[in-house]
Amino acid sequence: QVQLVESGGGLVQAGGSLRLSCAASGDIFSIMGWYRQAPGKPRELVAIITQAGSTNYADSVKGRFTISRDNAENTIYLQMNSLKPEDTAVYYCNARSTVFNSWGQGTQVTVSS
Image (tube, rainbow, N blue to C red):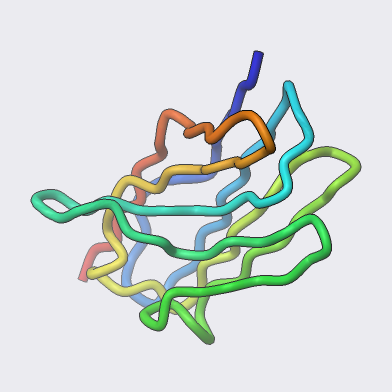
């Protein structure tokens, strides 16, 4: 059974930082990442990382967010710096294996201006 446990969301002022964590269990995940969904908008990619450490970021977060991965712990992190009000959304962890494409329950990030 695949399980993703997210943590680290919250309320922060513009310019501040937050760090999200996602611990995965139940399989070996070749790609893990973060997506976000703001009210009234579709879910969008934030950042993904492979087991080998290759990364891809949305243009809107490049230079501000950093995704990292601990393969031994099957955990990924998203360090978010210089946060903007437009980063406000529910952030979802995603993990993909040969069998599963799994989502976490989501964690709210709110950036006040």
